[in-house]
Image 1: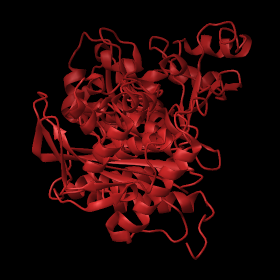
Image 2: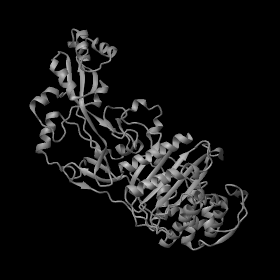
Image 3: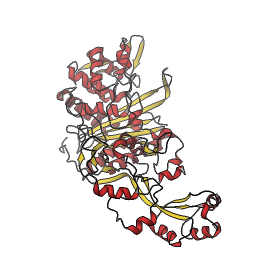
Image 4: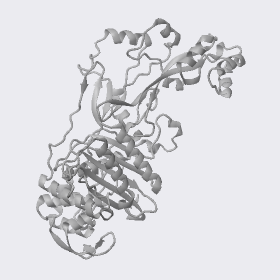
Length: 555
């Protein structure tokens, strides 16, 4: 009987309330399943269902009224495919008044069975939660399930959970629901402070989401990673156009999920030391404070001693006298230690806090954690030195994407969000307000200079300058970080986190893309795993949204 709670009789607004149809399929003993929808928004503003209600019919029997199960089975199996053993097991429960046999039949099948008029055989309308995009975006959308300790369905993960108060509906009888719809004030309760029922409209663009998902899956499979994730967002407003992680799950088929950890969203729940993509934050802070310029030089010996620690470049090699552009272009750890010393520990800590290190972003998804920033409270210089190039402090992916957005957008800390608006029952809608462009943490000048350095990294250094785009300026940085051991005692020698972020067009960015893959096999650096996926996503977005080129032929 518990399984029957998933499938309820309901009339949708706009149904024809014909007496014959209602009486034929209505079952007042069953609860009415009703829930608001979740929509993606395509580039033209059209709504695309991401979570809605599937409609159909289910077949049930009353074993205490069945006298000839063989004849009934033969008649029913001529219309629909029924599991033989399951049917006879349930039909043999002679004292049982109700058993469900088959779900999700179409109308032709339901009509054919109903026309047989077999005593003890019933056909009922049903609705179920349907996720048209299957695995794509599942970690963000979530799913519904039973509340622990009860039979009530509710959102369990993702958007389904975060906006449960908007999406959930009060159960109602079939006929009572009809009259309530006609005679009640549909805005009552919403305006007066009661339950606010409606649909949730997301910023997520379906083609962008699909493109991101396919690229993540490609990376994940090619390098046998533990998992791979990414986000596409507007760095000026915080609107999230795509967010996904693989492997995911199909919310239409939860029984096939072997590991419930797949239900979570690592982009807001996972915490990682990000490595070299933190370098633009440190450099931007130093540019803003005026302690370095792009042309400032230092001597790189390949390593530097801080207290009792030997800090070296990724290859251990020295470059001699180099400027700050080369620190970014060649991703020199010793250069970042030099920059942090110029800033000083207190100023460095202050800037990192302004970038949101160690705090939640406020993204409208459940389970967000704050990251780790305890090392910024240390009295040891070495902790600040390593933090300057992304080691010893940890971020969630959405947190680092938010911080890097401030580098991209002129220096403002924005609030990432998946929701576009809520469309309430009664025909009116509301756009939630988000903080953005109200907290300036670095100057526009520092942001532009950092952008110029990141553009040069793409044009001249990234894979030897072979991925430069002649039509568009693209700012980007890679990161390859050793993964910390779970017990906190050091780092794995053979496990790395690869990350990549970029924004474009660089000097007036429409999009910021962040990608990462955990423990890829058989490859050393993020430039090899994530550059081409990033460039393919970039090419798609520029073409799909028809963004005009920002470079002249000579650039």
